[in-house]
Image (tube, rainbow, N blue to C red; front, side):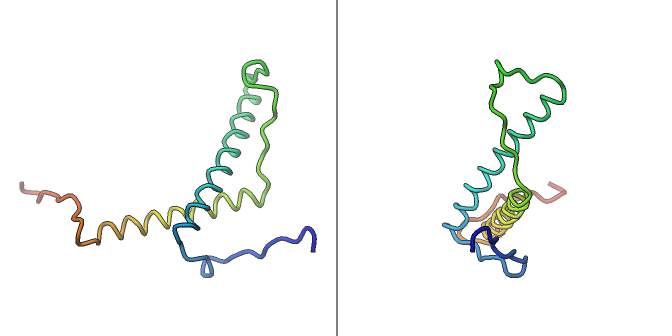
Length: 106
């Protein structure tokens, strides 16, 4: 079926993080984030009247679609959850003790 969209995935049914899935998600998020920032910078410069074709190039930055905006947000949330889980795992690992804090009276 041409033009059919993939069904949305709810938070409870999100995929379990794996190394391959995480690296693919990071690459996709970086690509979307770069396009988002370029389009935003382009729009900001034009709104201020500071955009110069000779200096900034004549190409128009491609804006994200609504689905891509949602994908960028979901990927960011997914990656932040992976990062948080990794930090918790590092803190609880017995073979690698974390930095020791001094007691308040020291």
